[in-house]
Amino acid sequence: MNGTTTVAHTRWRALHVRKRTLGKGVHTLTLPPSTGIGLSVHVSGILAVHGGRRDTRETILLPEDVCVTPAEPNRPLVVSPRGNRPAVIASLTIPEAAVRRLLGEEFRMEERQSPHPCPAVTSDPVLAEMVKAVVAAGELGADDVYADSAARFILAHLRIPWSHAAAAKEPGGSLTQEQLETITSYMRANFALPITLDDLAALVSFSRFHFLRCFKNATGATPYRYLTELRIASARTHLENGTETIAAIGQRCGFSGSEHFSRSFRRVMGCTPSQYRAMRSEAHVARRSPA
Image (cartoon, rainbow, N blue to C red; front, side):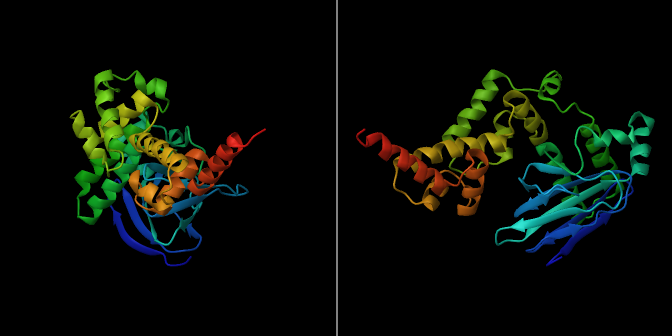
């Protein structure tokens, strides 16, 4: 491993957390031996998670993504940073003894494997934010009472039905049409600005965790993905009709830098902004050429 630094390592009765800074190269992260529940979240930078065993695929983690770590002990997580900046990854483990102490027999340990194959990446902004919050609390010296409460919340969240249809049936689990219009109108009017989750939640007086769940139930997408698609739609218009540089268009549409713009555009459109501009230019020339 190259340039791996453990920034924080906190052990409570109910939770074990670790935060690492990863330099360039491929890193094999040996997860703490545990028959409990393991979660990993990328905190900053660009991080790719590689498939295990004979699986050669890789997945780029977004800020709202959670990697559900393998159920069998000692199976490693293989990751590699992308770009020029180090990547930071936070790992959280709830030992089986803590699970049984907090929930008793009502929670079967095999439930942690469903519905995700291991290792698996799922978009769950509530869980991602919770893992980051627990790591930050550990750095600030939070006690076992906090850790017990956080573990209970995470365990309860993991038991919630994952399908949109099931979640939509939960009381108070969605947004009214008026609330949704307020939020999406704000996004459309301000997508070029650095909109935060707290900004959006404040529009409807929700907590950030409740807002995340309600917005996804109402739209089928997280706020981050919804906002990204608005930005990509605007970028496409500028790429097709303008002469601005790629970097200028990315900045105009709210992306933090050229690399962020290119990566996000490729995930949505399947090509880079420059490739898209070239294809649209060729199509425009072809339409104007005489038969």
